[in-house]
Length: 115
Length: 115
View 1 (spheres, helix red, strand yellow):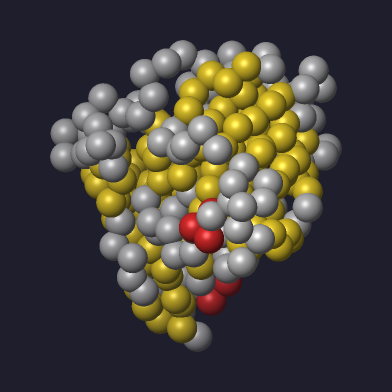
View 2 (cartoon, helix red, strand yellow):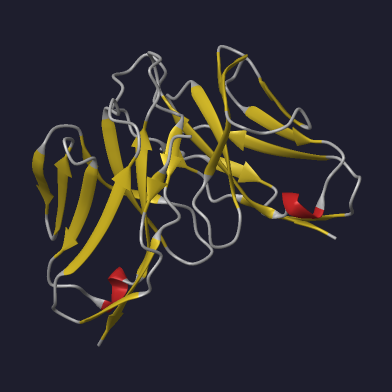
């Protein structure tokens, strides 16, 4: 049973550049949520995709955008990178129409460093 | 501002002791509560879920919920060095139906179990 997979595992970018991170959900899941985890902090919710639409969004600027594909995989795009965007980016998958207590399954994350 | 508060620690306990981790949350209407364990450099791993007042036990782990006090705790009995990790409290404060992808996380409590 394939879990949540993310790519790449590590990435180094320069300020002002753009980056795309990718996620494949756990088999059988249809919803992808993205989180940002800065060093020493808990994960912060960026947004959630279901049926190829953004369903919920956290307090992140428009530089952060996403996409979900028909096969449920997802991309996170960040434009005009800032030093403060350096963090571990986590993807989590779940079932949208399950009960509210369906747990999230996290991928191993992408470590983004902005120099 | 919806918040989840945890002591950052570090919390140090001897091997075999009970570790007690605490968490408070701001939104009285929150429905579901989770404890995640995160080893250094790894992604969060769900260890306990709790949805109603009282205790929920799973092996050496017990989660306790008191909605009136807006308080969640995690007890780890017979602590082992392998339990050394950061423990994240997460709360689903979303009022919307469907998946609980939007979790509010605390900053985490770092636990160290000394042999």
